[in-house]
Amino acid sequence: KGTGLRAIVEAAGNAIALPCYADEARDLDTVIDDELRKAGMSMTLDARQALRRNLGGDRLASRGEIEKLVLYAHGQKAIDIDDVNALSGDVS
Image (cartoon, rainbow, N blue to C red):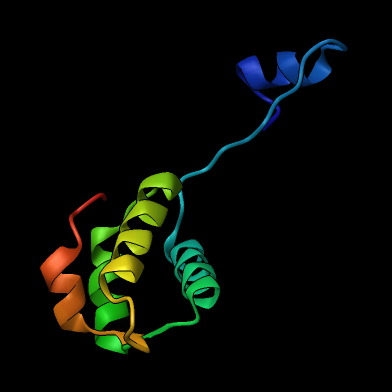
């Protein structure tokens, strides 16, 4: 912040700087929780840990993986490690 191109853009009256940062571990938990809440589902701890290892800083790709798991586990109350192992790809 305050250096280089960002400083120039922030000082300009006709431009805007929009910071974008890669997701970190706590951000991934929030994304996972949001998607599970919307689906009315939960996830076992070992499944969550395995999923987090496969997710990375791209929030759109992470949401896609979580949505895929939710669809795969439709009708179940919880996503478990077998679901993650069967379906989740590495998007880290």
